[in-house]
Image 1 (cartoon, one colour):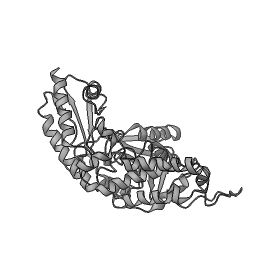
Image 2: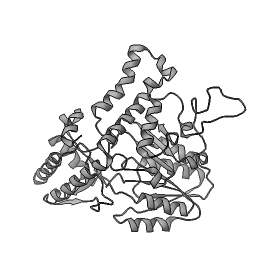
Image 3: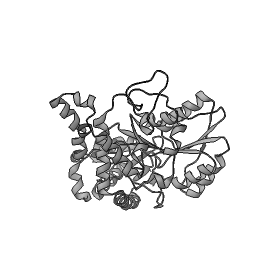
Length: 386
């Protein structure tokens, strides 16, 4: 599978230059087919198969295993969630907080992470501390360490930042946190599908992620990893049917499932979950290492090409240990909001404004070509001239 061949798998690319996989990625045909497969089956054979949860049709067990294999963990440590912030809420609402406990975040957290954290802090009398993201891993670790205390219960940070694509030193953060007796929750929305991630090697406690960005799955698919050793530290707050060992509920006790799927309850969007797994399978066939190398090559190319645009400035890192397929840049005299809108209107180039509307964020995905970036640079240069 090469870049030239896989572009035909994405119908969207016939209509636009898609450079916003950090927002929502287009789906390849195989994922679209899987997303429609179950509704099509139900329309032809009736909905009874949903009540029976026939694995040959709903493919729930297979979907859990696909995600677990991709992450390098066990299937019983993975559960699907309705969205990323659902996973964050399940964890922070379930931990046994004491007034005065602390949560540490970075200064670049997405609202999907930050809102549940600030909400639990407001309700439970917790303190939220933050450290700055920088282009130096050593500086970040040093800044993080100054924010830790004996009361730090949780570190909740992005593996890769949303606005400028900085890759945080995840394994080192986990070591520092665990030495302090703290738990770690990573926001994996911008990491999975960009480069290899093996959660057992990172040794994080929680990892929330989305299917519809770099994993090429449907909106709003999402999932959550909970390390087996900390599962019982997260109390069940919201719940419902299918969260217990059996369908019969004892009036005197609740026998929750012994795995992460105790946090899956009620009617499940099986089509969305199996389609998310199909996206993971597509990324696996391409190879995360190959995707990472492709993105690095094109990111370096874009860095050089933007130097030819008057007034352009890049805000993303060049260090291979920190760079990703996210390249954020600004152009003097044009807001990021206006530039992104003009790129879409005049060139059918889909990007997103970033850094409080001052810049434009470009996402270099597995299907991105050099010609896509040439088109971006040419259109940006033309806009600066006009």
